[in-house]
Length: 117
Length: 110
Image (cartoon, rainbow over all chains, first blue to last red; front, side, top):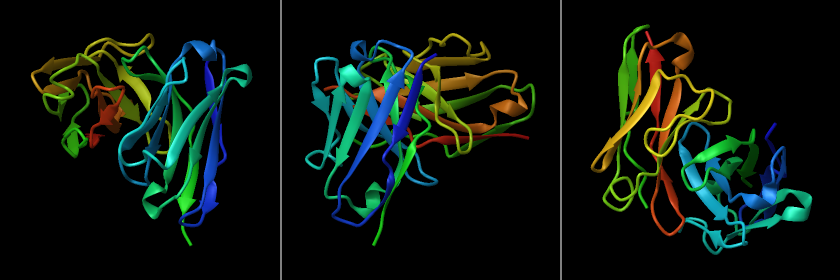
């Protein structure tokens, strides 16, 4: 059974940093592109970052230069390093598995990040 | 990249059919047959319902179907059931390994 379990969320002050983790199981992690998607309370979904099997990374303009996605295949783990955090980054962050570019077929339960003083 | 446009809400009675639209641009929906749809119940993670415009993952009811014309994709739910009440989001590949989601639609079963 495919499982994705996020961790690392919490309360952080504006300008601070946080590192999220996503533990994957039930599939060959190294063979899949992976993503982070976030959702502010009561708002819609927003794609945050992607990483390919070769370690290539992609970001939207809203987080480029502040967020870094990475993976450690030996540990079946996905990470999101978030720096220079702003109030607008407050959201539940989900990790999701890529379905060959056609969608996101498995999602974790999410981890809440709150940026506030 | 601007969010794809969806109606804020759609409602229908049990047994009826409803359609949710998802309007993008020639840079996303119009350029790629890589539109997916997600169902999200309150407090839960999104669930993939449709991928590649019209394909259903294993286990998803055939009451859910997808289509696309030009810059607009659509999700149709036929034989509406109480369990279909949820938020629905479309998503499109937007080139250069980027993705854009829709604004979301709340489906209410009357």
